[in-house]
Image (tube, rainbow, N blue to C red; front, top):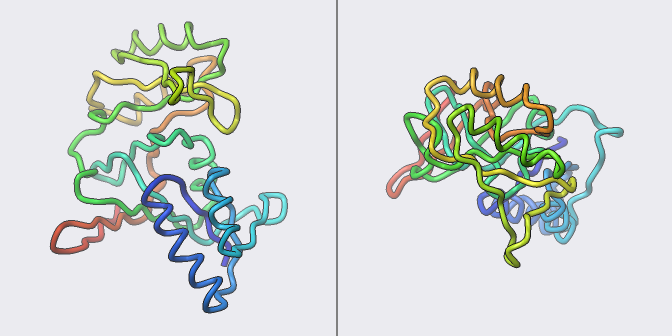
Length: 205
C-alpha cells in the first residue's frame, strides 16, 4: 500500500505505530507525507517515501483534525500544514480522521480557520476576510515573527464566525486573490475515529 501520513500530534502517534511495524515486523509500505516533520519522523523508522511523480494515487491517508462537524466537515491546519495536508488527502482513495471527542462540534468556527496566504497579499486578503465577517490575525512563530509554512507562505487565523454554510464560505475564500489554501476540508473524509474516555466510536458521512 501507499499511505498518506498526516501532520500534528495525532498523526505523529500514527506514524510512530506504523513505523514500528515497518522497522520491527517488516511491514511493506511506501508513503507520502504532508509535512517535512512527518517525513523526517517516518524516515527515522525506515518508512520508504515516494513522490507524486512516482505515485499519483494513495490507498489511505490518516490524519487528525481541529474540528469535526456533522457530515465530516473539518477544520484543519492548526499545525500550519494545511496546504500539503489537503493535497495528500485529495489524492487518497480513503481519508480517515483520528481525533478525541473534544474535536466534535455542531458548527465549525470555534477553532480559528487557518487561511494560507501569499505574503505580499496579506493586507488585501485580511480586508476581504473581514468583509466575510472574520477577524483575521497573522500567525506568529515562537520568536514573534510571522509563521512561515513549508511552502514559504503566511497564515491568517480567522476567528469570530460560526459557519452556517461551510461550502459557501469555502467558495468565497477560494475567490480571494492571494489565498493559497484554507483549512476547510469538506466532502473529503470517509471516516472519523473518535476516542472518548470510555469508548472509541466511528462516524461516517
